[in-house]
Image (cartoon, rainbow, N blue to C red; front, side, top):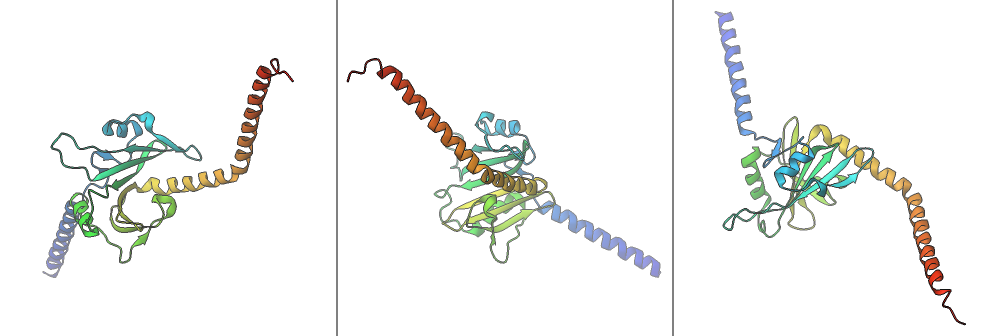
Length: 231
């Protein structure tokens, strides 16, 4: 009888834990996506879904890794369409793979909205949020200076941060592919170090090129003016 009771208890406990896991999964949203854009996609796929030319992608760094940004300004469709709350979306690619999505909200379309208003709306898509007990500071090289993370949604692979600017009522939602976040940040820091290290040589080359162009311009003018010069 004791063995039977223990077995029944274990079965009940296992069923309860499974039910809890299923409930948590049901509450959580698909963090791999923002609208119809999926983290991990390539540039061509993202550009096609945004109806943007891939040629508009900007090369941010070419070494030690190839990092590109593609900007998208969503527009409401149709004359009676609802106003668009998003001002701009920036898709960032590391080695051709979408690793970060930055969503900047329009100040006028979101005027008066509180942090809780944003969290409630975003949670309808991504599930319950985690709020830091104190606003977490954002790394300057990640999303911009003087900003706080006020809410997060995450799982083992993806994370979305709701960020509030310290300079005004501006909000940003940032989604990242976790496995590429650290390599991309490391590459950004290394690219900056290389740029700073080579800055003197680059500036010297620029000044030499400008001087050469100025001398060439003077020589061209000299060849034109010398034959017709009369003292």
